[in-house]
Image 1 (cartoon, rainbow, N blue to C red):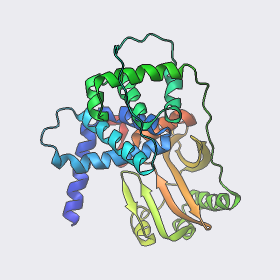
Image 2: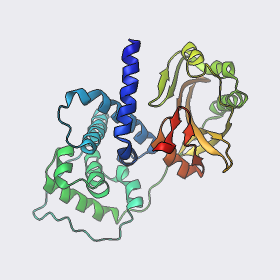
Image 3: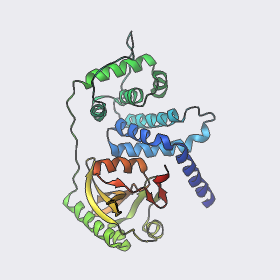
Length: 306
């Protein structure tokens, strides 16, 4: 079994090298498709896992970009179907056209897609207008016709012109949750591994996305925390409407984002702690929001080579 695990890790590294140039675009696609950087990050991770796990079924992958975006799209649509969301239908027009000159602010438009349109409409707009797939490629990914792709994007652009800026929801921690987080921050700052473990439930979920997953305190103690904590400065921030912990490493150019963490708390205990230490696209996007540069070289990760 250990041999299989090692082989899978080697394969993951090779796969990440192959898709390196596609990662940022795919992450942004997932972000706007789901309407949230947090949900987009989850979709991105699920897409990566499905893409790696399903390669053995593909004998002739002629377009890797299309392969990844197809998985992301189908995964999201399946998720929406399970939640019984209206997936929407895509109808054609008699005279589809690719010409559409307007002054639409695409950055603002992208923030509105999730709230205004169905999942399939959103996917069509993003694939065609932002990520520059052809109408034929979009039709194949979303399972429709090229005429419907042209018609859908035209109608969506017209509607987007009439919509005011959307609202953003924030989730503030409760007083009891904040007490747990403050204790966690103190233990993290002091390098107190046992103090951190005391704050977890007896059924913890401790994860560094696309890096490792630990589900018992012994796994945490003897695994990711066996060499202690890095001793960096930690601070609380709101990121995309969610309270987070930012781990900052000092450098000659000022503090750098070493890690971003998010905790879920129930009954006074941390039941889930997720680290985004290994998630390049997420860290880079968050760094723009938070105003800190990312730490590029933090073993075993080295993004300076990318």
